[in-house]
Length: 257
Image (cartoon, rainbow, N blue to C red; front, side, top):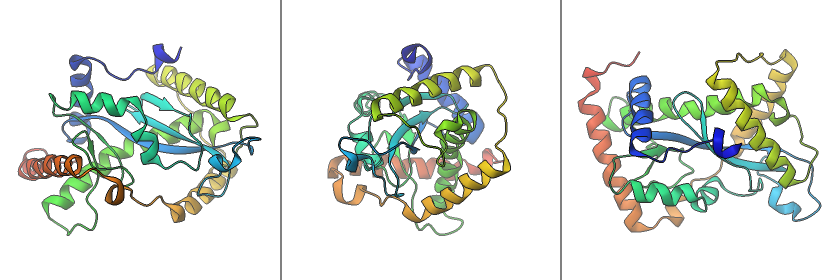
């Protein structure tokens, strides 16, 4: 079921279709997907409890998701505990190696936040930009485009409220991971058929907003400055500079609505 309904593009034709969709919707070229992690609360495990106690001060799975421009989830990894940094999950994921290979022949990348390392196949925002500069324009488009994965996470949790941060899965980590995977499969089925989502109740929405506000004070520090390989970082910087220049030069020809 997971292989049938959660598919990362394997051919150049599939990748091209996704990139065109991102470009048409967000005016951001070369984007194959947007990556982020989200915490799913679980009860305290009997074994290796410390691996699941996250920076947000509860036990959780740290679930990595990659979405396309239409909020379909192309990859899910629910195998890591909440104490694991987002960038560590990505560094140990097979899609990273896959992206490393295909990016040698294709101008293609994922979009991640500043907690991820800048690579030729993974574009990150530029911090502390000045207004009305090429770097600010790039970062605006980056953030605007990458927001699709955050909306995907919100939609997934609105559909399956057992994943909401104020709910708790009363199962062992492996069983909780199976539940997350099942929810992603069902989300993709619902999303592809345009099945509407019932809105959260006022109480649920307030609880979620309250926990999210607390989460914002516990953001992960970027790891790229201390753990990046210099050659890979330099490749990423070179490609990002070229992308910044390309977006700046074409901004008047592709107005943003």
